[in-house]
Image (cartoon, rainbow over the protein chains, first blue to last red):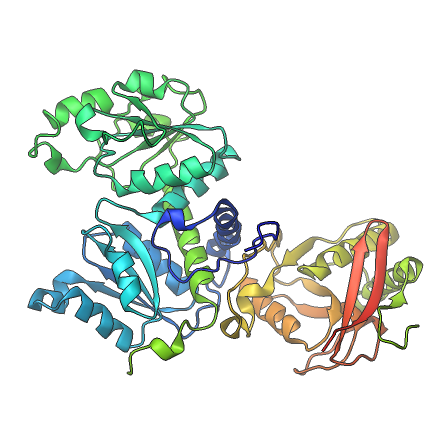
Length: 323
Length: 181
């Protein structure tokens, strides 16, 4: 590709990893998401771009906000959105993942939005089917739309990305949100720190070019953005942390600890929040919290992704399984 | 004139300026002033033109009509037959269009499909009391029952030609370019 040409489209079939995207592509996605933001204030909150297309939300892990966000995004683009959650599907009868996705495709799906507890499942599915595949979180690996909406939220609040210092606090080791964000943030020229107990920080963190801190006070010093991660409560039972109470005392954010960061620092959390553990007294710094912005922006980002991947011609019509 | 099919200049800067002034007067005449009048430019070409018309209206009436822009990409009927959809530009309608008299502005009227998109878009935004269409160039070849209310210049063209409108500072022209087949 000629790099001097400006990028006008996202010439991709799938969104599997944030590292599939270039900086101009991410900027184009943000520009596109911008024009979807106003949609919620319109009298008709739909556009016809995906009329007649079918999107299947295939979720092998519980999710409320990501699944709902994708569902609203698809519906606002006029697509038909079908939700399959594994507790109600043939998966409980022992149908294999491959049979399930092939069946979904044969039923006429144009796109599959998948969440799975095993890393790499979206990549594998993309090789098996002719329709679009969008990663809505795979195992410990990636959650690319979450990273996009987080960066979009930061850019909206801070009016820039490059040069900002962001502190990612908590269970970085098990967080696909952190992984996708770290890749995207470094791509956009941000300084990324990870903050947490040594047991929850990946050993390779310094090799990835991250600053590592094990105390919140050092980690938050001069930070422009604080990204709190959800603490899976079963981490205590697995021995990663001595107790939830201690974690909360050392790494939970409170109005007092927020003052250690830059005076205009903003706070993000991918949700769902364990109130009293990752955040205490959020009502005291509501103006600094971007958590609800993240939810609002998530729909716009997912609309942008669905539109850019799916509004064009049907992919590889010939490869589709016979109906 | 270039009979070999090179670019042919149809309007120069002073002709464009006079035409835009006449279009602004016609808009005011049609609408009997600026009451509830708004100008909406269709991106890309209609945005600059609507600003130019708006500036003339302001110089005549002393008030500038509210102005907005539409990116009609989401309403296109050919998205599914194109390779990949483009990134969107932000549509900006910073006023309520309910009960307004909207003048849609575009540089070139050709098949009418873009105007159809813009009409559908506007109807999703609210209920204007009327919508009129103003174009600098009407080049014919309509594929839908759409006509302009205010026309700068009608130019007979062939489908193998392209009408190029430039409205940048110090670089204003309308040219007819023959596309190589």
